[in-house]
Structure formats: structure tokens, C-alpha cells
Image (cartoon, rainbow, N blue to C red; front, top):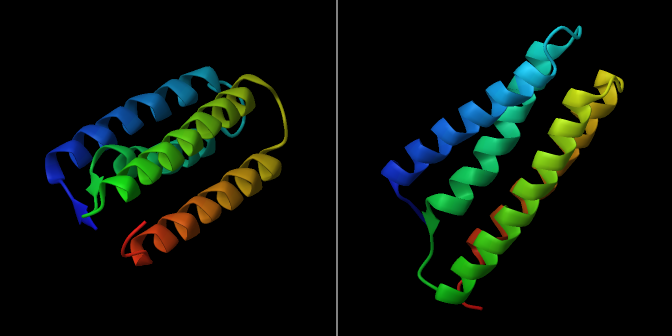
Length: 116
């Protein structure tokens, strides 16, 4: 698995902008900084794998991009719903931590596959 640097930088910048958007939506609430930081981690992990990771197999690349895009969409929905509503912060952190862990475990499993 290879990581292209320039698309990774672009992905991190996009993740920063989306995290700042989540921070501004949650601004004024007591945990707006936590919302921004957790959003950045979630968005950066999925966007970097979507835009910059490549493997030797084209089928594995497609599976990697589809999985990353699905998780990115889930993170968009979860983060902006939690930023807009006044739900409790422990649930927000636990849900995002579980989703990131599942995403990273699946990404690791994809990296061990040689051919699809």
C-alpha cells in the first residue's frame, strides 16, 4: 500500500475545513472544541485513505475507496447531527471512536490482502 503525499495534504486540508465547520456549528455549546477535534480525526482518516492510498490491485483500490467513502459519509452525518443537537458528549466520542476503530481494522485487513 502506497501513500501519495500531495493528495494526502489536500485531504488533510479538506478535513481541517470540515472540522472547522463542525466547530462553528457547535460553537457556544460546552464541548465545541472536542467536537472540532474529533471531527478532524474522523474526516482526516477517511479522506486520506480515499484520496491518497493506492495498492497494486485495481480491484482492491476500488474496494478501499468505496469503504472509505461510506465511512466518510457516516462520519459527516454523525458529526454534524451531534454538532447541531445537544446530545451528550460521551455518546458522541464513543460512537466516533468505535467507528474509527472499525474503519482502521478494516483498512488494516485490506492492507494484508495481496489479490482480490
